[in-house]
Image 1 (cartoon, one colour):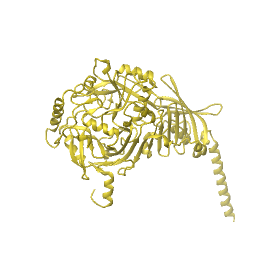
Image 2 (cartoon, chains in turn brown, yellow; image 1 turned 135 degrees about the vertical axis):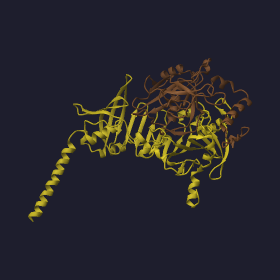
Image 3 (cartoon, one colour; image 1 turned 90 degrees about the vertical axis):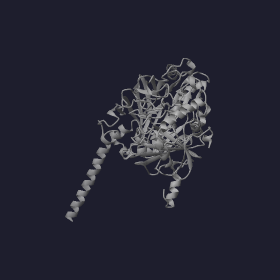
Image 4 (cartoon, one colour; image 1 turned 180 degrees about the vertical axis):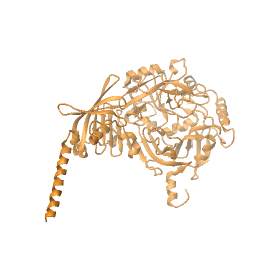
Length: 229
Length: 375
């Protein structure tokens, strides 16, 4: 089977005590055994050296609510199905979406947080940068934009993430598959503005039904520059 | 004879009274006079938000519950157990299933206000999700419903009343099947897949939970998606989903629009390994995810309930949640020769091989049931 081509299949003995320690040690030792990560990945810092993503896939309700504990892998709200990268700094991309798509406006939905880590250990909360809505009001498309949560000196490697979705009345619940508007916003900003698109470029988790609608668990990458118009 | 005459007279009087009363009630008031069974209401909706005026056209059949909404960005139709969205990118997404599976989608924007008006007359009490519905009539006789949705004041003018037969000819509630690019179809739990996927599940009962519903999701990239960007093949999907819920869920499920997953929910999702999205998952398990490279995720060889060999891979993309019993993850994958099956719900690492081993193909279970053998 294709997934066996990597050197050795790890025989984790879950029944034995200390399996978690073994797992962590394996990941770390494997990392050092295989040498440094690719320069691109390291500079963008989307995946920590131990293989853990530096942001959780789901947003949480705003800080101060029972769901805001990022270290507890519960309280999921929206999947972060878009990553803006390269040149994907939050403020810059916010302007691009406002001027190059049918989204806009501020202060139009509840406040949420993303969950971030820099070293792959503890996740902490990261307030949303801002949000935009479009394509109607009673039922509408909506996204929240989050910064990476850590600094990148080189603008090329800056990135941000978004939870793009469409929602009906009256409780801001989704009314279409999560994939629909992940695709829609990517198409809107790809033409005529010319941002490049890598459909479902990053695997985060397997597909599932979430809040009544399908999400394939992968993240589409939208480039920050006008490269391809 | 006299008695028979009296009975005849009183019967006749009663019938005439009934007819008179029916005529009086049937002709009293504009919209109330319409027989909802054969009338479609065409409504012009307008609302202002963030200083911008929005408009949409909505057609509602109070008798059947069907509706159609048209905006600048697309069309939405609800008809006969189907909810369809025709988006601006050229794709049509359809959701098919019971009223329960539709959740709040079954209501259009103005349909609830209109139905309540026809049933109860104005002024209306405040129904759930609507606030202060009022009805006004212009000098020319046009009725307007005023209500709030999502905190936004909406005015819905009854522009036209259309006979059902004419609406059918205009194909108001017809979904263009040939343009469908995405389908989400409700299935009864344990029913054999109609998509080309070997679907796995745990059987009807598992760990105190019941398989309460299932669904199939199929998606293909729209022509526009295919013409733009890279990896458009990853927009293709064929998935079979089974939802397991505890009794405490009381009918709730994250398969239903607007519902968060009840405590203890487990989802089992199978997709063919041949799909590009599945291949990208396998590469991620092996440490290649986009341009990122990392150590392969730990995995474990297991034997499934039906004797098939499989590899189980816990999703450690967000680390391992510390627990007294050695850590947990939210999801794990089970990879067979034909299928990737994801099981989501929160599992101790120690328990995952045992849990995964209980998976079995849905079709195989049916065969064993037919043969009267043990599951």
